[in-house]
Amino acid sequence: MRHGFLLIAFSVFTCVPAFCQTVTQKYNIEVAGFRMGTMTVAQITSPNSVVYDQVSDVEFWFFGKVKIYYKTVSRFDPTNRQLLQSNIDAVSNHGNYQSAIVWQKDHYDINVRQYKYERKATEWQPIEFTAMRLYYEEPVGRTRVFAEYFGNYATIERTKKGSYRVRIDDREDEYFYEKGKLIKVVKKNSIKNFVIRLIE
Image (cartoon, one colour):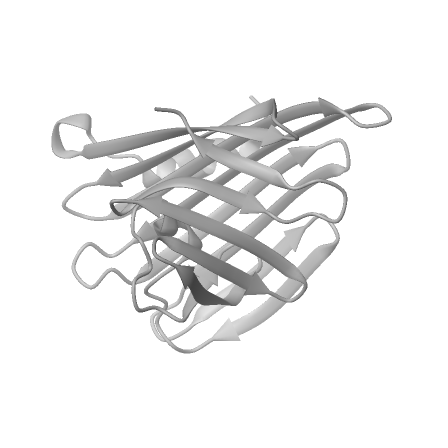
């Protein structure tokens, strides 16, 4: 067991397999062309919810071993696709961090605590499109996306056909699609960019 929170999140968002439709996508996480870890993303559709479950597991040497295990689970209403709850759990050399975004009938309670980043806020407008959905939906015509990790909105800018720049604060990612399917994400970093590449 990596962290008690993971068991809680799993029990809240699982459903009976006979009533679920699951679409899984797997990615390699690369730095300078070398594989540093993997990411698995699942879209789980049931009569009661649409759940996006993302797990990243990274391990590499950078003046010592660096290990990061990162899990995000976001649950949506299957009818209007509104975000109902998102939980993030991170386990790393720098410590363990948890975040939660929860719809409370007429607003969201946002409580984000990650490495070198914290945000507590209230959001009154329903959230419909989040970063987790970018793995399964090309953001055609969209100008912003709610980033679960930050608990805030990021801007979306189309750079060319099938390519989008997503920015929030001083962070920038690029998403690349082919025939509507996400094939690569480039996460910009001052030292080295991380590339998340679809495993065919």
